[in-house]
Image (cartoon, rainbow, N blue to C red; front, side, top):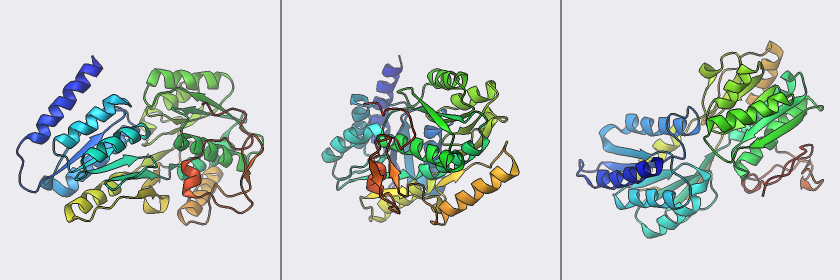
Length: 355
């Protein structure tokens, strides 16, 4: 039934974009990997879409398709938007990279934007946020707060974006607590609340008392509260779902980027490239520090400010992977290319990256 509804949505989208609109109204499309009500990743992208509407008023016409699967479904949805007259299309998940690249070649006059990927073309840009910065602060907090010395992580898919956040989370915890260990469970889905909850529950049962996640629902955090342990919100402030458990949350602020790129299309000066937003630009935000002692709060704030000021960088060598291979020399700072291709666990993580 959901697949049928998505096909209907694609057909309706072509009709929508084909309808007469006011002159000079820019057509902006969004492809979402989850539902807009996930209270996480997609929810925050849709906040960005709504802020585009607020900023430009009747100068723009926006639309979206939610819960679009990778592969043929994504290609059909992107192509439908382009055929329907979209001027710029944002595809908001890693797995849309190849479908968007393919469709972009067919529509050279349409601007395409792909989130969290690494490929570009003449009319396709890539963009992402340095969410690992906030995740490192979470690791600092987890390392200071854990009573069992066991922290854990619910991962969606083993891609560089997720791997680097696992690493920075662990590096933060290890910085303040050399005894800490980390467990990782992969759910192979961005949005599957039951699986996310089960993964968290399994690790909590094995002694984890600090729950982090790179999935899109509040389920792991809610599971933490249900079991009397602590955790972190993902992509948005999720404290209303677990007021006794959330320590802080990463908040993805996509609005400035979406507004800037829509304006560029309007002005005729859109350019391709790769954007990697920094905490200092207020696009990577953190929810208030709660449910923690003042000394933890103060140290976490100090690390956060160091990151914002560019004086502190988590991925500074020497860093070895967990096979003993030196990945970053002493004093060497990871380049964006290194971060965007990171497919290794750092030293100390007793696990193997899934193939």
